[in-house]
Length: 128
Image 1 (cartoon, rainbow, N blue to C red):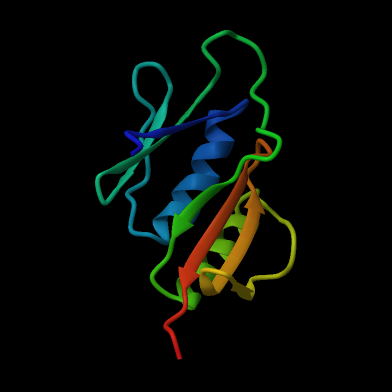
Image 2: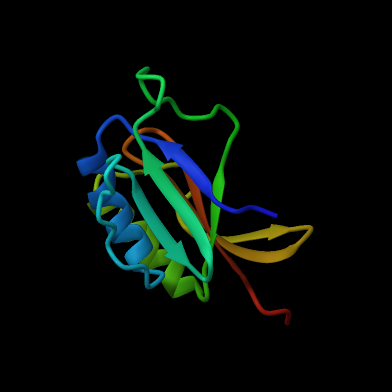
C-alpha cells in the first residue's frame, strides 16, 4: 500500500543520530544525507525518509498520527526503545510491555522522536 513514509525534521543531524540508532536495531544501515539533505532508511523494501520541509516552514508532528515498526521479538522492541531514549527520543505512554488487544497480545513500546513524531514498535506475540 505504501511506497514510503516521509517525516519532517528541524535538525537532520539530530534525527540521523536517533534514526540510525533505532532503525539499526532492525538491521538498517546508517543513512547518508543525499544532495537535498534527506535521510533514507530502507528495510524489507520499505522506505522511511527524513527531510526538512520543502516549504521552509518548521517541521511539526502529526496530532493523532503514529508510525509503527514491526519487530521480530519483545527483546527487539526493548532494544529499539532503549536506543531511542539514549539517542534523543522521549519515552511516552506506558512502559514497553504486553497489551491485550482485539488483534491478540502485542508487545508494544512508544517514543517521540526528537521532532515530536509518535513512533511505535510492535511485536505480535505468539498465540498460546
